[in-house]
View (cartoon, rainbow, N blue to C red):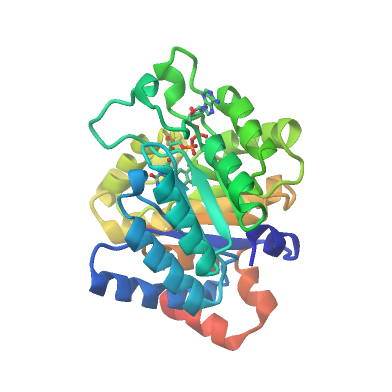
Length: 323
Ligand code: FAD
């Protein structure tokens, strides 16, 4: 079913989960089993990433199809549009529709690592994510519920074209995506709650007062990866967050993860409180791992209601087992 419908008919808080397609067959089987266990966390939807330029097309479609068929939770397939033939996009959309996948995250994509992004040489009809949103609306009418990406700290390309990189700079383009028919928005990962809250206010005021806006949260599984992912995503790590990791903890992944779970559950609770529940869905970049997400849910004052309200013993057992 569509994410928008589920969102409208569900009182929060709840979570959603992102996965990427593994390279090998055993990897896929393991991941499907893990995704099955994670349904105990009652996610509103699952998303499956897409390799820019269609590099993972087959694997993304396969994982998304299996998840949609076997897990009884709506799946959202990511799809990027630049450097991609229209034929690849149509094949992906038709295959998704045939597999009953009703949700697409419409993205632009990035150039392959190491290659320059030469806008002028891009002859494709798809230059920006909005072109894909418009294309899906035009060719597929209401077959898909469409999500788009947003950047609470600004998309990194601001600086390259001489303008400051900020959420404000991207706002007209985000509004364009929403006006073109986007049904929900998922943000880039961030660790600065104040910046997200400023963005949320701006979004509510300038773009839409009602559209679902999901903050994107990435669990911290190792100090090295935490730094790397933040840099790659241009997410700042506030000093008070860095200070949570004493020097002697930084080489110990278990300790780092444990501190990271506390940081994330505080982020969730603060966002839920300070928006008075207006932000009611929290999207986790799982990195295909289950433990940290399960721990955030059990430790969060608000997300743990997923367990309390259900009063479903099987659900609680499932989560305790993972956490
Ligand atoms: P756009 O909305 O097109 O924006 C890109 C840039 O262009 C921004 O700087 C924007 O301000 C600017 N812009 C937009 N429209 C215009 C216009 N009309 N004129 C001038 N400038 C404009 N990548 C993958 O390859 N696979 C994935 O599965 C994937 N999943 C993602 C999931 C999420 C939630 C997020 C936040 C990102 C994901 N990405 C993924 C990364 C994404 O492809 C990159 O961040 C990409 O650089 C931008 O994509 P976009 O859809 O936000 O682009």
